[in-house]
Image 1 (cartoon, rainbow, N blue to C red):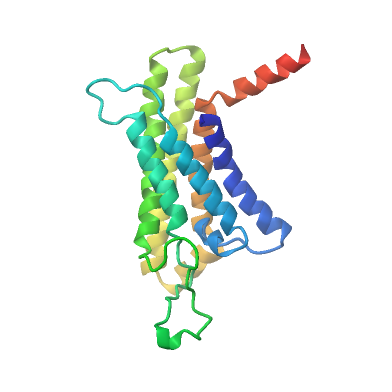
Image 2 (cartoon, helix red, strand yellow):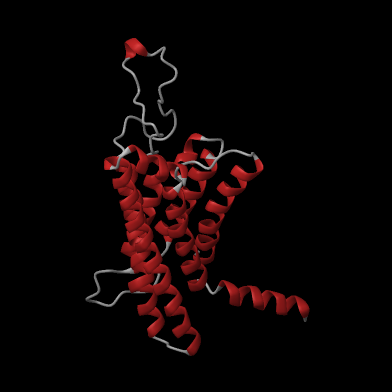
Length: 233
């Protein structure tokens, strides 16, 4: 499960970048905006798969007095991932569905998949919950479990977990800053944020950090080495 979560986390930004490169199209302003492209099904599928894996993840048995547990955090993260998928973000510039008397105005965006007529905060709230839980795994849960049977390798892994956790928090902070810039900044600031695809790249930073942490926890490199050695013999 840990290895699949890591692979899915890496596959998402890579597939979106490949789509933009192979089709010679511009990157969307954010990962979520790919929902409104032919990659929308891939985005929803990967997010739902991540959500389901997290919902079924049990992790370690908690201590009697432990409140932040693998199970609770993974369920919250799974719900957040699925929420990002089923509550799509509205495109930029935002357009709302017209009232019935203007239903012939086809240039307005009306989502026809996922839940419709939802406020945008449901999408962003789900994303925030998802990233916050991933940071908890990296900074609290993974290191705590690793310390129970500390070796030289486990000690190195803890550094990876914490680095990934801090990168996820950095990603969240940068995303909040860019959203505030889009919301309250002047036209020049807004244009630079959209032209440079800052939201997209900051999201990629957080997703890749999530993927690396779970691949490390899943001992992916060791598994690959074992398979190669088994085939060689």
